[in-house]
Image (cartoon, rainbow, N blue to C red):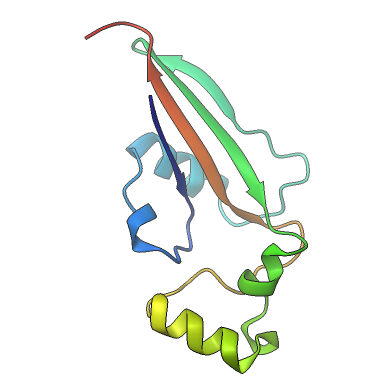
Length: 108
């Protein structure tokens, strides 16, 4: 089984490597609210695929919300750990990203 997290706006470059089908779903879905949004459950060529959308809300917005509202300490921490951070500016209910998984149903 392979699992991961991905988003259109990365904070951690380690999450950049997701399968093409995940990036396609994110690109097709785009930046939007998650209300009414369905993830993905499918089997393609013997591989089960699942995507679960992640909604920005509550505590998430302390780091991922409006950068102008971040404390100086938070700004310094994010700048030092993630100098290319793009994962800010979210509002409550926005699609923050996804958790994805794939599993080979057929031994290859």
